[in-house]
Image 1 (cartoon, rainbow, N blue to C red):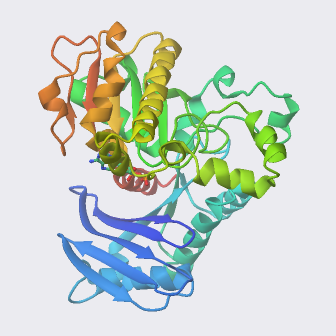
Image 2: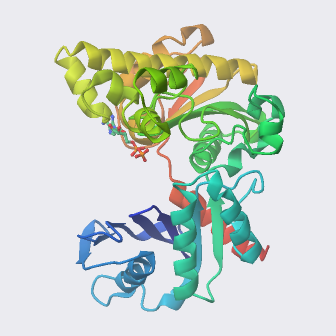
Length: 399
Ligand code: ADP
C-alpha cells in the first residue's frame, strides 16, 4: 500500500509518497510560490532532484503537477495514479471535535470549515488542498490528521484559561496545543527505545524548531502542552514571543499607537530569539553571533533555554515525576550546546548527560549516562510517517 502525505500551506505544499510495507519514502517534494510568480516544484527520489518550473495559479494545478511528477516516466516512482491507495492530509486545527485522525467525508469538511475561525491562517489552505485532491482523485480515500488531536486528552484544569467561563463555552477560548503529531510520534518512539509500554511511562517531549512546544505525556496520553489557543503561547520561538504578561499588549498598543494587526505582527514575526538578539530567527546564526561575543545573541539563547528548562520543571510537577525527556525538531535534534544548557539546570531531577553522545548527530539515540535517573533522548521527528500510518490504519479498518 502506498500513501501520499500532503501538508498544504498558503503558498507552499510539502508531500511524501510512502510505501507502507517497509515505511520507505519513495519520493518527497516541495512546491513553493503557489499562486505567485516563480512557482516551482522540487521532487527528490533517492537524493536525485527533479524540478518543474511553470506557473501554478492555485493548489489544484500544484497537486496535478505533484501527481504528474510521481508518475513521470523518467523521474517518477509509480506507473499509475491508481497505485496511490490513500492520501493523508495534515490539518492544523481539529478543535474539540477530533481527538484522533479521521476519514474525510462531507461532515468532516463541514467541521473543518467551522474550525477556520480558530486557525484562520492554517485551516483554509489545508481545506483547499483536500478539495483539490478530491477533485483530482475522486475515488481515493483521504484521511485528516490534526496537530491538535493528541492534546485533546488534557484535563480541564490544564486547558482552561482563567477568563470568564463563557468565553470557553461560547467562543471556544481554551488551550488546544499544536505539534501533536510530532509529540505523539517521539513519545511512542522513546517508549520503544526503552523497551517499555508507553502506558507505564511519564515522558516530557521537547519539539524545538522554529516553532517550539513541550508536551507532558502520561501513560501515552498528553496531559499538558505549552502552546495554547494558538501556536504563539508557551516557549520562546524563532520570531514568536511565547508567554508574556498579557497586559503588555494593550500597553504597547496605546504607547506606540499600534492597531490589532500591527501588534499581532510584532508578537508573531518580530519577537522570539529574533527580537531579543536582533540577529536572526535561525538558531545557527544566533549561536555563531554569541560565539563572536554578541551579548544580545547570548541573552536570546539564555532566555530560550531558561524557558525550556523551567517548563520541563513545571511538567515534572504536572506528571509528578518523569522517566524520560525527548528532544526533537531542528534545534532539538541538532544543537548539542543548547540541549546541554537546558539539561545542566536539571540536575535536581537526577539528569546526567553524556557529553560525547550529546555531541553526535543524526540517529535516534540516548544521550544520558547509564546512571542518569531520567533517560534523555534525541529522536528525529517524522510527522509524515505518523500521518501515513494513521491513514493506512483508518483506511484498512474502514472506519
Ligand atoms: P520548523 O519546522 O518549525 O520550521 P525546524 O524543526 O525545521 O522548524 O527547525 C528549524 C530551526 O532549527 C531553525 O531555527 C534552525 O536554526 C534550527 N537548527 C537546525 N539545525 C541546527 C543546528 N545544527 N544547530 C542549531 N540550530 C539548528
